[in-house]
Image (cartoon, rainbow, N blue to C red; front, top):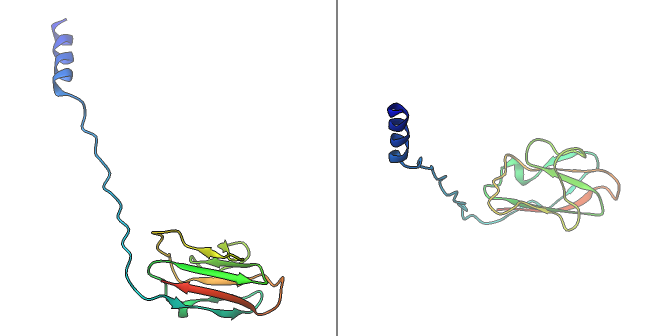
Length: 120
């Protein structure tokens, strides 16, 4: 009985276990001017925007008159990326692009497709 009482007393006196708090995540925006990537994109061809430079803080792409897709993780296609149709796709606040941004237009409208793009 004494042995069980001693163990229980040691657990009570030790107090609750300390809970580690996760550090706060801070979003750092690198102040740079926006870069224009507006261009005409031929149908059924993946095209890299912004001269192949990965935007440091985010991007926005809008396509008109065609179904287009944008991707920052390899070449865009009809099965990868995000749709960029009107009103377009804009990266969420704090999102850092993974790599160069590409756009693919499916060819269901006039070719080439007008694509308006901005990077910041």
